[in-house]
Image (cartoon, rainbow over all chains, first blue to last red; front, side):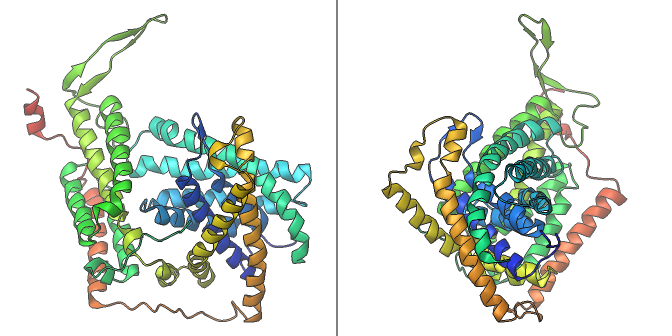
Length: 181
Length: 294
């Protein structure tokens, strides 16, 4: 892939907006549906969106998809504003964007494994930032922030992400050739 | 599945303010609150946050769901944690003299490990302080989705210094929401007509997550395909070559300058009190000690 990682042209503007809107709508919609949960792991398919958009379109798109998408999701649900969690979601989408330079194909096993590694990295950094910021904002101790916030959220996002992101990548590969870019 | 913003047009002072001024004020007050652990200072911010909330004139029906969530979070997670552990915050709660109100000694059977949980006056005051602090920050931002027009987010953040393309992307995101919600609804209904029931996914965790794909993949890929057309249309209209103008033109009025000045003053004052004068650390009132017989 020849595109520079910091590129933010028309394409990135539109797909960042799409990613944000998709993340917001899917978060809101899947909250409304009574999705089952397995122990501490909830079904949160929406979480794959900022990560996938970051991988395919670059880190800036991932950042906006996560950050603005979380704002939209909270605005639709009426949850208020949780700025540090918005930034955390933005980081969760941004970091996998740096994998875009290493991914040569959206179908081959090596690229899918690289994507999954960056899913884990993105979630750990993003959710870690959001959880640990509670120490500063809410005055929690490290154990509560880590055990009560980070572990359940990160585990949920990692498991949902490493399964759904490769599926989206393979689906995207079918249409990628059509864009001619 | 109809998606609707929680925002409603209301003739209130809060909604007449420029959104940029509101953001500057809210961020300034938030950073001011995080500098204090003394409940006497925090009660001022608590009153300020609730004054802002009541000026927004939100109804209980609109906000009850988020209030339930906030109260459970604040009282159960933060309050109980503060009482049981006293950890977090300034750390002064666990140092110095402790006035024990209740304690128990329990030996874990099998490993003979002795646990001494206790509740002290300091921990009780810390729990109340932490709840006041958390509520002050949360309630400060709670009215935002209900009182800020989604159409002006892009213009607002552009006005606050965000680059043109980022601000436009944000604006576009809000505009895509109804279209994508409609697409999701169509996909959901189509898949249900084919026997796909998202509420009754079977199998283990991994299988259930994989079975979300028929809901997520079509909506996402459809959005990306549509996005390519939008990119082409924007490129043909020379998007990005010149500085943008915005449909919603924001103009500061005197009351907005007053609000910005107030926010900056509160932040500067808080920083001076905290850093300059060294005030604002955790404080246990004398009457609280007398209340428990100390």
